Length: 598
Ligand SMILES: [Zn+2]
Image (cartoon, rainbow, N blue to C red; front, side, top):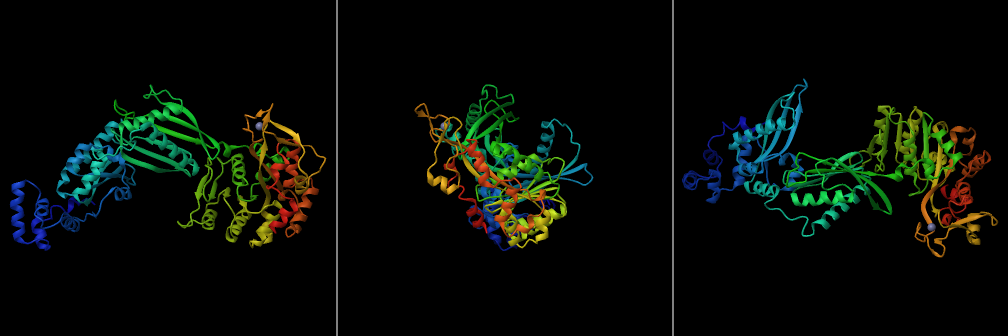
C-alpha cells in the first residue's frame, strides 16, 4: 500500500514531533528559524541543532505513514530484500541520487482477468514528501519500458503502485554512491587481465564442482557492473552481482572470454559461438560459449552477454562406453525396459554407480513419460526430467519427497540412494504399484542386494515381485591403448585374484621404443572402465530361495551362463583392456567380497 493515502493526514512534522514528546515547542521554534536561514528540511534542521536524530524522525513517520523503517540499511540488507540491480540500473543514476531514492525491486502482478497488471515499485527513501517526484520517476519508467521494448503500447492495462520504505539519508547516499561507482573500488586491480582470468577460473570451477550446466555473464547497467549467474540443478542462482565494476573491467572480461573461446573480438556487435576446454579434477570439460550483443552496448561498454554451457561428456557415455560387454548390454536393456519394478546399481562409494544410472536414464524415453529424480545432491542434469534435490534442512527428506511423488503418479523415478528402511519400503511399494524405480544401494555384490533389502525390513513378497535386477560394479584403470604389452603377473597377484597361472595377460608399459609413451605419459594406464555383474532377477524364477544365501544365488546365475565381477574382469583381461595388477585392491577373491556384505 502506498504511503500517499496517509500523507495528507500527516500534520506538520514539527507539531507531530512535539506531540510525540520528541522535542518541545521552544526547540521547534528555533529549528524553524534555522530551517529558514539554511534552506534545509525541518528534520535536517532539528538534527543539525542536535535536538533529535534522523532515526527519531523516521520512526515517527514510519508509524504515521505505515511505511517500514529499515534501521541499518546496507548492501547486505538491500540484497536480503531482493534488490534487483539490473532494475536499479534502468533508472538515471543522476536522478535517483538527486532525489535520494533507491527503486530496488519491481513486482508485476497480473490480475485474474489477464488484461490488467499491477506494477509494484519498491522504493527506499528518507523523505516521504517527495511522493510526486517518485511517482513521476515510476511513470517515466513504465513509458520508457514500453517504448524500448518495441511494444509501443501495452496489451495490459498497467496500473502502478509505489511501496515505500524509510531509511536514513546517509545510508541511502552511501549505497547510491556505491551503485553509481563514485565510491567504486577497482576490483580488477592493476592487472585486469589476470584478475579477469582468475574470476573466470573461479566461476567455472565453482559451477563444475556443483555440476552446474550454465553460466551467464552480463553487465548490470550502461556504465558496466557485473552479474554472473550459474544454473545448478536446473535453477539459475546469482554467483555475483556487483554494480561497481567499471565498463573497462567488463570489457576486459569480455575480451578475455572471447579470446579463450576462439571468437573474433572485432565483431562484438554480432552474435558469435565458440568453445574452450577447461580442466577440473583431471577431467577435461568442453565448454561452449555464446556471445550475444545486448541493448547496453555502447562506445564505452562492450554490452555483450556471455553464455557458457558446460558439457559433461563423462555423464553422457553410452553403456558400452562405460564397459558393458555385448551380452550384458542386451541383459541390461531387457531389465531397464520393464514397465515397472526396481533396477538397482550397487557398489562401494566412487564405483561409478550414478554414472551408470544416468546412462540408463538417457536410454529411456523421458520425453513422453513423467520422470522424477530425487537426489542428494543432483549430480547430473537430465533433460526432460523433474529433478528434486533432497534437503533434510528444508524438510525434503528422501522418504517425504517419495511419499508426495506417489500422489503424482510418475512413470519413472530415479532415487539417488536407498539408505534407510523407510526409503527402501516406499521405493518397493512404488514399484509394486506400477512405477519404474531406479536406485543405488551400498552393497559390494549384486547377489547380496535382495538380502540387504530384507534386512531393511522390506517384506519378501515386495522384493521377489518387484526387484527386476541388480547391477554391481567397480571402476578399474584401463591399459593404455598405445603401449600395452603381454606380461607375466607376479605369483602374489595370480594367487590373490585366483586367476590361472598359464593365462595370457596384458599391461601398459608406459614406454614406446625406449621413450616415455606420450599417450599415458609413462603411466601405462589411460582412463577407467567399469566391470560388472548382473543379477537378472526378473528374467528367472527360483532365485528367491537363495535370498539369505548370496553365494548360492551367485552359483545359481553362474549356472545359467551369467558371470560375477571377477568373470567380467577376466574377460576384459583376456581382451587386453585391463591388467591383473589394476584389479588388485579393487577386487579381492569374490567369495571374500560377498561374505563381506553379509
Ligand atoms: Zn601408454
